[in-house]
Length: 598
Image (cartoon, rainbow, N blue to C red):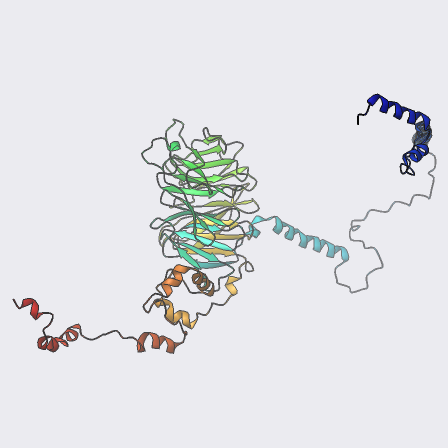
């Protein structure tokens, strides 16, 4: 059926015209309604209400503002009125000598020489010989003054009351390091050994819990913990620095450069013996080394392929010079190096081409500077030279030293110097020849550079020294192979612990263990770790007597049964053992006679 649009439109128009409301349309369409009626708004009424409300609020605010202005003007007039009255009264008092208003002035008292000794209160009884309250107060003040002087005196803070001695070896202790918490000490020496000392786990025997040779046959020159204490930098006599973890296991080894390349910037590592190294004070992954190849290089622990940046010390003539020591500033923005020509050169860490500060003759040319140390405030640099001097420098004016101390004998290229934790003292060590005196720790006042204190350590030269800022302890590395700890009595618990008793099983089985780490002491933790290692389990269960000694018990009887009673090794004469078969061979020559029958 076709539907005409014009007709449909006409019908709809008719329905809309004839129906005035929704009810009629709903009735036509056959339902009750279109639902809930929509709400209608009278916009004119809403606008009128809003306008009236705004007018009322404006009048209210205007009234408050007028009240505030009125009160302010009233107080201002009152203030000016009182000021004029006080001025007029003062003028009248100055012009006239009229009588004073108020009670009369008391008569003047006669001056007495003993006014200061008069006491307030009733008179003292006859025969009283005690001190007065004022005298007691004076005495208290006198007693307090020395205490205040002691607090201000930096010499009183030197921890020299007690000391402990830890035996590293028979040769010079050339490196020392304490972790940031002060719980673990590491020593290195000319005997190639690195020893780990744990103060919390040590007893009165003061034995190291681990000893290793990370660089084989090279003497240890520098040891230093990172700022987090989880990594240890080892600088030895070879060209490759190593990073160990807290327990002494290898983490990273720096690559060695190509020694046939002339420009050291284009090679990936050092090509000659290392001299020193240190960690960045702010970035835990960055460290620095200096070498006889004439470069100072920075490294990243996460990149063992190449150095991070290279700094090349130069003389004023532009010639190559060897750096002997290096150090970061306290904020890590500057890099300083002491060179063989006696100069000290400082670079901006981000600009490796030109030096920022350069002192040409900081020390005597040809004398190797052994140590550079920045103060904790970052403004002063201390340098220990091979010319038997200790100098301090102001970084802001680097042309001449602030102070110089002479007569400090040194025979080693790694003699240390450092600042006290409060930055008021400078510490260094002195060297002596064999059987000609004692090595000393010498303390200088930073401001005046007067020698304020010295401590005789041992009958050998003092090579290494460090002053821990958190524990206030001084560690010393002498040339006789002992590690000296200068401390306060309550700062080390290991000196009061009794030595650990050795277990009977460990005593008996120590020489028969043939697995890896055979020389290490057997502990429960180490045994559990070895049990999880498949290689260790295979070594322990291999045929023979070594791996299964005392497997069923650690008593003496078990040891005798396993190693003596059940031992079937033939200890007889080998000649007799062979001749025992001679008769059988002659009667039945099966193996020998047929070969020679023809």
